[in-house]
Each structure stands twice: as structure tokens, then as C-alpha cells.
Amino acid sequence: MKTKILFSLLLASTLIQASDYKYEVSPMIGYNIAEGNLGIKDDGYFTGGIEAQFNTLGRKISPEFSVFHSRGVDYKLGGDTQITRGAFNGVYTFEKTNSIVPFTKMGLGIENISNENRNNETGMFADAGAGLKISFSKNLALKLEAIYMAKIVSNNAGNADSNLVGLVGLTYSFGGKKVQKVSKAVNVVEEKVVIIEKPTVDSDGDGIYDALDKCPNTPSGSTVDINGCKVSLDDDHDGVENSLDKCPNTPIGAAVNADGCPLAINLHINFENNSYKVQNIFLNKITKFADFLKRYKNYSAEIVGYTDSRASESYNKKLSQKRANEVRRILIQKGVNTSRLTAVGMGELNPIASNATTEGRAINRRIEAKLTLN
Image (cartoon, rainbow, N blue to C red; front, top):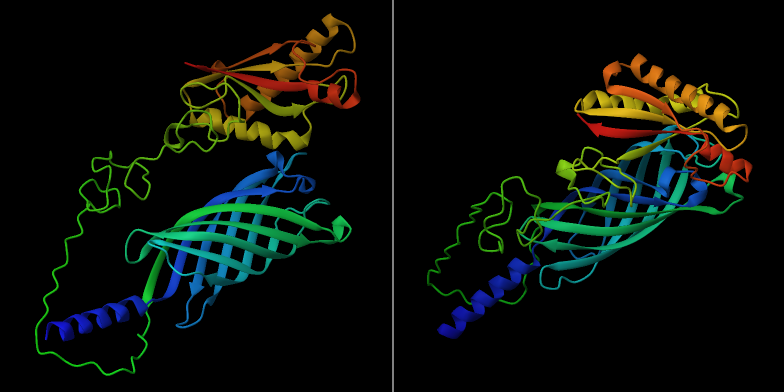
């Protein structure tokens, strides 16, 4: 009798494991590393989107549709663009090990560039990727993946433009499949089996049930890992967490204050030789800096102008002052209070490139800003 009951329970367990979910939806965020010839500033940008996978019982390869979008992707030479990608992939899922499910994928897609230039244009791409899903409940899993994309366009002599994307997100599975029929007959035993499920309690509200939570007293609102322990997120690696960082895209290695903002900022505004006129291509950078100052009113800024080393020291000092004054004037025109802005010309001091070359002199003819907490 006991043997029959045990056999029935084991068979039921097999049936439960054989069932699966028809649909998987995965909101994802990540970072795109672009090939240098595309002209993207810092050769990278953040992206976000969603992946939808459709599973069929008994098949290892499942179709997947994905859409990703990136806004305000800056070009090295000025201006920005929006990048939208749509792709269709076949996903091969490996056998589950403990709570980890590895997978690979391959497919085709199209990349739309809203502001094309000779280095970066709309085109079709082929992609290939790999990743894994780490389950922490029946329907939710942490999803990690990396995707390589090769885009063939006319402006690169038939060569592929490459992008590599690292992504992280959550997968929600739903829509139960039908369980495969078992041909072997099962003896029915007239005995009731009562299954008592443990309550799913999450005392600290971090999304990890107490039974799995290794850090049960996580502060409210904290970002946690699959063990329920707090994760310190600092995307720009400046030592200030994202939730406290008022300047989230600080260049790596820059000295910052407690708000994560650089003590000195190169606004990447450059001038023609012997001129203090701000070119139109740099107006967008001044607008972004003005928006920052209007948002964080506890900061004042000193606008610092520079020149290259040609001409006399006294002349360069006057020219750099005019450059700083002109940028200050435009910031005031865009709504920044005059009392929060000062301007100073440093002439040919503090070069950041060699004055022996044309390119170096062009870089040295610049504007910087020093931030001060009021």
C-alpha cells in the first residue's frame, strides 16, 4: 500500500516538473558598447526595452521578439540621436540546474537612427547572444544576458559595424501549458493527501520572501540581490550611489563632491582661433548645463575660459575672459540667475593637450566650469 502511494506521489511530481509556461516577458536595462568608428561619445550609452518569448511544449528553440530604445545618445562631434532596435531571435534553452537556466539566442533585426550621419546610419543587423535566468519564485527570475550585433551599412565599405550590449532585468512567466499525457496506467489509491503550503511572507518588503531572505532587515526602498541583501549601485563609479548622485554620468576618475558632481567640468565647448563667438553646435551643451543649474539651485558656477599658447600672454588673458563672459551671458539668457554665475579668463594656462599641434590647440581653446555649493 505504501509503495503504491509513493509511486503515485513520484509520478505526480514528474507531471508538475513537466509543466511550463507559454509566455515570458522581460523588461531589461543595460549598457551598449559601440564600435569606435560610429562616432558615439565615450563609445557607449544606456539602453532599455522589453523581450517577449513564446514557448512551445517539447521544443527547445522558442521565438523571441524584442524592442530596445536609447534617448539622447551624444556624438563626439556634437549633437545627439535616438536609437531604436527591433529584433526576432530563436532562443535555445538548456536544462535547468538548481534554479539556473542557461540559454543562447540568434536572429536578425533592424536599427533605426533618428539623427543619421556619415558614421552612423539605419540598417539591418544579425545578432547572437547568451545568458541565464536565475529563478527566485515560481513566476519571476533574474535575467542576465550579453548580445553581439553586426550591422551591414553602405558607409563602411561592406564591413560590419559592431555593438556589444550587456543587459539585466526580470523575467515574468505566465500562461500554463498542458501537461504531457502519461501512457502508463496508475493505480488509484483511495487515500487523501493534504498539502500545506508555507505562507509567502516578505517582512521587509524587498521582494524576497523571508524563507529565502538572508538579509531580513533591509531598509525600505533599497535595491537588493536575489538573497535580499542590499546592493550599492554606482553606475558612473564615482563613489556616490545612483539614488544620491545628482550628476549620474560623471567621467571615470573625475574628482566629485558629496552629490557626485565634478569639482571642475569641461563643458566641451571649443572656439575658433582668435574668436570668442560660441558656435551653434555647442549651444545644446550650454542648454544642458543651464538646465542642471536651474534644477539644483544650491550650486553656483564659475565659468573659466582658456586659449591656446599663440599670441601674447596678456592678449590671451583678455580673449579667454571674453569667451567666459560670452558663455555666462548665454547661461543667463537661458534662465540662470546672474548671482550664481561668475566668469574668469585663464589665458593659456592649464593646457589639456599639446599646443604644438593644430588639434591640440583646438582642444585647449575651451570652457570649463567650477561648481560651488552655496
